Length: 443
Image (cartoon, rainbow, N blue to C red; front, top):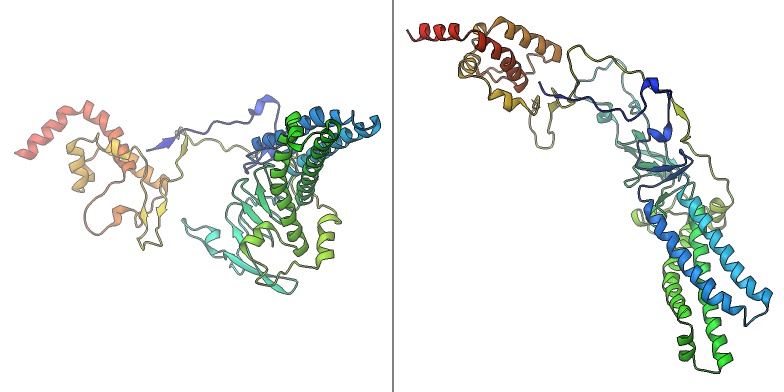
C-alpha cells in the first residue's frame, strides 16, 4: 500500500501557548503581509522598491544640483520654496504609492464550500466521484440598470463573482471592480485603491512636469548670466540635461496613463472591461454620465474591507490517527478516472506508485496461483489481510477489476503489495512444504 508521510505542521504545537492563528497566517492567496497583517501586498512587492528608486533618485539629483543652485539666482525665500515644493510633492507621491500598494484592493473572501445549486433536491445523493460544482451553472445573468450582465462562477474561490469582479491570476484572489494588476506598485487595482492609484499616477505626472520645467529654467538662467549659447549652458549643467531627458520620457508614460484613466473614469469603465468588452460598441450598464462618474470615483466613501487579516481563527480539532495507518493515504488512491471529452469509460486509477515494485517481488508460484484464480491455496493469513484491506478501502466488487466477466484476474498493485508482504514470511518459513507441494503436482 502506498502511504505518504503526514505533512509537517508549520503552525505552533498545541502546547506552545498559541492556540489560534490569524487570517493573514492561513491566507490562501499569493499576497505578502507586513507588520502582522496590517499591510497587504501582491507577490511581486519587490518591484515596489524599483518604483520608489525611480522617484527618489531624480528628485534627489534635482534638489542637489538644480534647486540648490537656483537659490543663487532668486531670492532666498523663493529658492527655498522651489526645493520645498519638490520635497513635499515627492513625499505626497510616495504616500499615495503606499496607499495604493499596501491596502486591500477589494478582495472577496473565499467560500469554504461551494454554494448550493438552485433547484437541487435535498434528497438527491451524489456519487463518490461527483462534486457540487459539476451541477452548478458556469454562468448566470443578472440585471444592472436594466441591462443583462453575465457573472461567472470561480472554481478557486467557490463563489459567483459579482458584476465587475474578476479573479487575479497573480494574487490568486477575486477582486471587486477589478481594473488590472499593476507590476509597478505590486498590487491589484480594484474598488478600494483605484482612487489612490489614479492620484498617484496624476501626481507623478505633475512631479515630472515640475522637475522638467525648472531644469529648463536653470539652463536659461545660465544662458542669461554667462551670456552664452544654449549648448554651452547645457554643458555647464549636465545634471539638468539628464533630468530633462529622464522626465521627458517619463511624462510620456505616466502622462499617457493619466489621460487613459481620465477617459476610463469619464465613461465609467475599468481597464479590464475596456480591453475585454469594448463598451464603445455596446451599451455600458455602469455609465451614469461624466459628472456622476467622476463623483463615484472621488466623492464617494471607500467601502470597508471584507477581510480582517488580523482576526483570530479558531483552530480546527485534529482528528485522531488511524490505528496502524502510519500516515495519510494518498488522495489519488481508489479514485475513478473519467475522461469525458475523450469518451473513455470510468476506470480505476493506480492505487500507488510503488505497486509495480512490489508486484515484481512476488514469486512465480504465488503469481500463478493468483492468475489461475486459486485463492484457496494462498495462505489464510494473506487472504484474511487482503479481504480486510478491500473492505476497509471501500472497494465494491462490482466496480473493481475483480468483477470482469473475461475470466482473467487482474490484481490491483495494492493487493499485490499486501500479498508480497504476507507471503514473504510464509515462503521463508515453509520452503519445504512448498517444495513438497510442487513435487506432488508434478507427479
